[in-house]
Length: 87
Image (cartoon, rainbow, N blue to C red; front, side):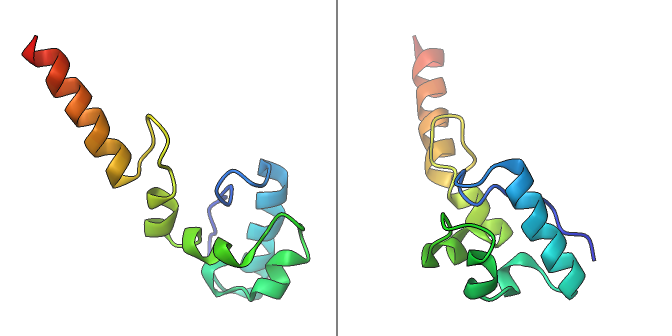
């Protein structure tokens, strides 16, 4: 099983994320299936809310900043682009 590196909502750096991804791969599971206690042994920055971003859908939805992939961010970008095109 191959596990892609996530940045856990930008809380962790790439190295920390990679170490956790390797742990999931070693355990033969995906990140979302790792128990919270296992995730937290890698970083004190990981809280219970991390489970919201460990699925592909949750990861996409968590990127709500301008230029992000969250549906709300994309809708805002489309609205801005339509406004500019209407000028």
